Image (cartoon, rainbow, N blue to C red; front, top):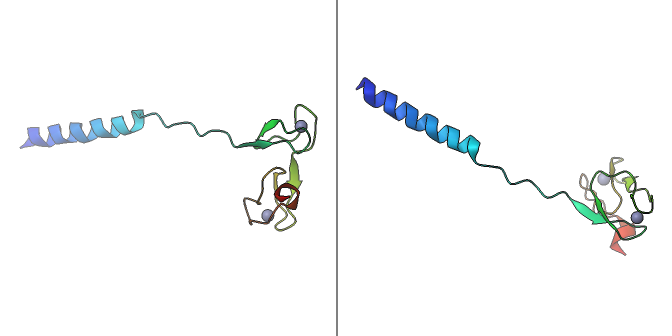
Length: 85
Ligand SMILES: [Zn+2]
Ligand SMILES: [Zn+2]
């Protein structure tokens, strides 16, 4: 009886280890187009490395800072008119 308990415990432990071993696919970095030079820029960048255009702006809807090239504010869904045109 005790042996069965040990075996089932080790099986559970094994599956827990497997769970941790499975590699989590890395999320692709959110990227967009620079409003200045249309180069690919990544989320979080402050300025474009190509033309040094400012890539961050304060949302008029909620006051939070987000990427300038996003169509909608990720926090309040405020439409970014500069991109939607
Ligand atoms: Zn640029
Ligand atoms: Zn907002």
